[in-house]
Length: 196
Length: 196
DNA sequence: GTCTATATTGCGATAGAC
DNA sequence: GTCTATCGCAATATAGAC
Image (cartoon, rainbow over all chains, first blue to last red; front, side):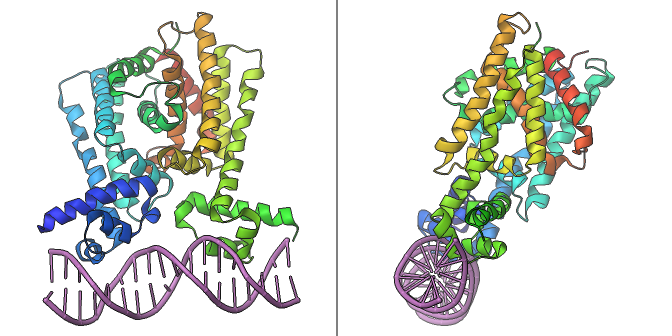
């Protein structure tokens, strides 16, 4: 097998297993069995289990680099916020494991948190903060908004919808078919509030 | 040592260690050493590591039973929502480990999820849904709100503020002294929206 | 109720053959 | 680059003494 084929296969399998049971819940024996290769391949290619985990993390959070895309358009602040909501929904839909690494690292950080996870999250938040500040300075948004709090509010709404899936799937459909309704709904609450 | 003293001591130590490194990240050796007792005490009192973990989970989510308190008052729907925000903030302040079990079980459920965690979360959500429905039927809230989506929005805002602490502590203060400002802020966004 | 001692299994890492 | 075989250690659980 080609060197990169095996590397990618191991990363792909490790992504699923680490997501499902955490770094300590998976042995390199199980990983190498699932990949159909010898246990020694993990040390050879990644320098050990932690090295493999760090490669998985790096791939998971590499998608955060493309957050700039929501900011490129010559659009209003509100349009950019909707673009952010769409961007984050697409990411969760394309990668159902991301939220597990995200919450796991935020609540039980490994040694890789500050190098991989923290910068990725901070970048997204800083871009959103600038969008809110832009809206405030152009008199679109209320003057008394705290930009960071406001960003955490919108990010929290969207992320929690996915985080709560297991506990709320009997109350509400989490199917992608409802995504457009959801986006409209969250944009309404975020812009107009819930009062009639 | 009295039987219950030892049980409580083990649960207390296990709560911290399981929160910090997860079920698979802690050995019963380390647990019993930290408690200053023999390793066999864990099997004797809890039937093994998983039994101890389930006792920890049960204690963590027992606080959810008191959610009714926010609903007892003869108050408006909006007042009850503010009471919920306060209730959830107090819980996170009093127990910094709760969020770790909460997110860990939602993204990597153990065998205890459906018995302990799911009912606790669902109870809170159902009470909040009824509050939103009450506000809608009394013409306080917009008619076109989906109650469950709306509940997840407010729960997401507050919980994510705490979840994101590690990644945002350089952008914003998470000190309890700011809690009142935060409550006002989130209530404003949730009721009036961000538009000026 | 608590301890020590031990049985058994599984872990991560690596030396050395090919 | 990949494998087999193995080392040394740590895991959970429990038998039996007190």
